[in-house]
Amino acid sequence: MESNDGGVLLFAWRGCLFRVPDAVQPPKTGSLFLCRHLDVRSGERMLEIGGGLGLAAVLAAKAGADVVATDINPEAVEVIRANAILNGVAVDARLGDCYAPVRGERFDLVCTNAPQMPTPPDRARRDAVAAADNGGVDGWETLDRVIGGARQHLRPGGRLIITIFAFLGRKTAFAKLEAAGFMPTIVASEVQSFPRIGFERLDHIRSFDVEASLPAGIPATVERLVIQGTAPE
Ligand SMILES: C[S@@+](CC[C@H](N)C(=O)[O-])C[C@H]1O[C@@H](n2cnc3c(N)ncnc32)[C@H](O)[C@@H]1O
Image (cartoon, rainbow, N blue to C red; front, side, top):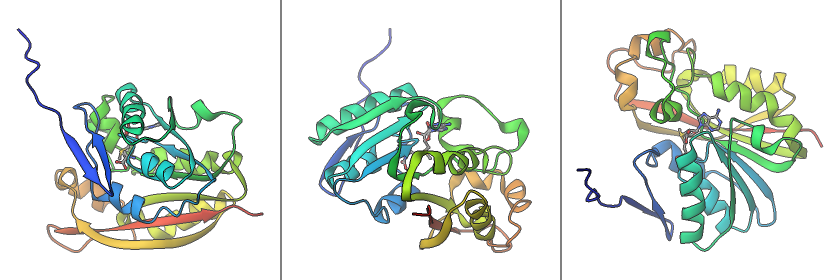
């Protein structure tokens, strides 16, 4: 017989409480890093792609933004709605891939802490855990799609805010943002613990670390960046 005696995992931060269901990734240092540097103003319309359990979305709604959060994981969409209610705010949570749930809509701010762990082809999977971490062979698969669709979904002067591991390349990120018509700037840089999942694919990650951001040997830390692309007025 299946037991319902597994407990409820909760995450408390900045005066808010979040339910963390089994099928949705708990907040990590990258999630908090993005939230700390998400400059969202009251009245702005914000889109978060890959909202997870709704951390950034709920905090932005608390700050007075009008928030849409999407995710491809149905359990994430369900818990974003539940966590918004739990914290007394409204978040429009929608199920779907990248910009599909917001076709034809425009925002002041698009943000994402997209899955970005470089993934060897023989490690690719399609489950919810993989969707939260794996970013295709070079780590850019989802980020490229977010960057590529951002201009169409931003108002003039709107901002795209992403967080990336420095080993994905800050020059690469700037080149991708410029090619998509944005003016890129580094908003913040932070040194964090090296992600556990990264150890098992270290050689693969190193093969893409063209800017040599990782130290030799087994790295204990990784640099993480928040980068903004600003659209022309
Ligand atoms: C690294 S987790 C970040 C979750 C949350 N934003 C945070 O910072 O804690 C990435 C999230 O993106 C979702 N995701 C992955 N691919 C996606 C896609 N193509 N479209 C929308 N969401 C996606 C995953 O299900 C997961 O919830």
